Amino acid sequence: MKKLLALFFLISLSWQAVYSWPPQADATIDDVRYVLDQNTKTATVTCWLWDGTGCNKYNNVEVANIPDTIEYESEKYRVVGIEEYAFYNCKQLTKVTIPESVTSIGSMAFYGCPLLTTVLISDSVPEIGESAFGDCTALQFIRLPYNLTKIPVGMFTGCTGLMSITIPQNVTEIEEMAFYNCSSLTYVMWNARDCKAYDFGSQVDMFHFGADVEVIPSHLCEGISANINGIPGNVRIIGDSAFYNSHLSALVIGGDNVLDHSSLDYSNLDSIGTGAFANNPDLMIVMCAAAVPPRMGEHVFDSATYSQAELHVPFKSKKAYKAAEHWKDFLHIQSIVEPDEYTITFQNWNDSVLQIRQVPRDEMPVYTGETPTRPDDDEWTYVFDGWEPQITKADDDATYVAVYLPSPKEQALEDIHTESTMPAKILHEGHIYILRGKNIYTATGVQIK
Image 1 (tube, helix red, strand yellow):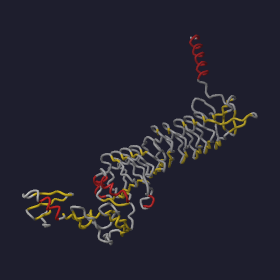
Image 2 (spheres, rainbow, N blue to C red):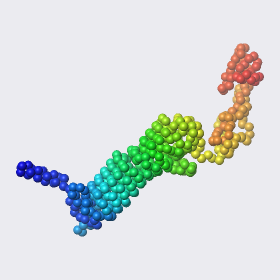
Image 3 (spheres, rainbow, N blue to C red):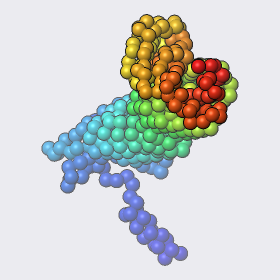
Image 4 (cartoon, helix red, strand yellow):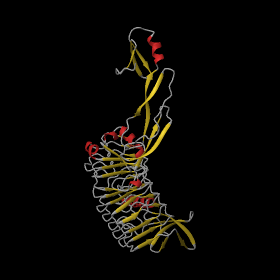
């Protein structure tokens, strides 16, 4: 038995040597404890006491203003990190300021701080550990650093007071349960350029996109009854079912205000995934400022949307949308901003410009120049016969080209007629002439001679 106890004691000593806790703390300054590295002259914030139930059991620190550098025994040390459990279970902690010198925040670093309301983190921090702010029930707002690339597992789990969150530009992944049980989270500002989707929960009622967003991931806003501010002009891709069943009444692509048409002047949107805006029965206005109609998957919109909603597109792209696959299924396609007048061009047969007029919207264009002419050639004379296409009320820029009725010269047809005494059809420049004896007819039976 004594041998077994001795063996257990030796194993215990060996385990403590390898897994000693806490790491050696060398300095305590303004109620914050640091580990110092003499070689690199750096300091790391560490935990207080560990008694088997948690860190900082005896720590009454209320405000932790962590500096860029500390001075200890006449030596300066740069503060570069906050270790795991550094402020775990600090019952009195209300505010933390983290400087630019810090590049990492360890797992559970601020877990279980029930009075913590304010956390200020500099943009230099690229990495935050799992559950770093978990169960901080009083935390209402936190500004995440610009350089953060991942929001890890459980980072804000149980933060029942958290009301809003901004996802930084460089975040590419939000891991499972990052915002689990954040029951007060109602506002999300999504700035991530290209990030995997995360289910924030149906309680979110306001979801805004930042100007730098390039990809809206699949299913991101599926099923949430949120006010969407619009899809920024830099967005290139909208994923499958991104806004499926999101209770949208208006959709703006390329601007942020459905009433401010002047802001809808560009969009880089290239493709929209299958079902992206399906099951939004109240969707009545769709505005897309992309000059080239984006590629669309299947069932992007419901049939009811295609039939009832107004599609507003750039004025100069209206014809392209009316011809594009799926977009042409909208029954009501209008210009985002209808001009007061349109440019109407009248051209001659050789593409020379006869007249350019500015015609008020919905008025009938009228050519006011001299009657167009076309020179005769060896076999034909040409008589002005109107415009192609047929002139209609001005609802777009348009070009009309003069068309002419060709009349065969007598000598030319006589020469042809003498070659045969039988009736003959003659095709010349797209017009058919029929010779019967000495009579010449058009293809529609109109006698020319």
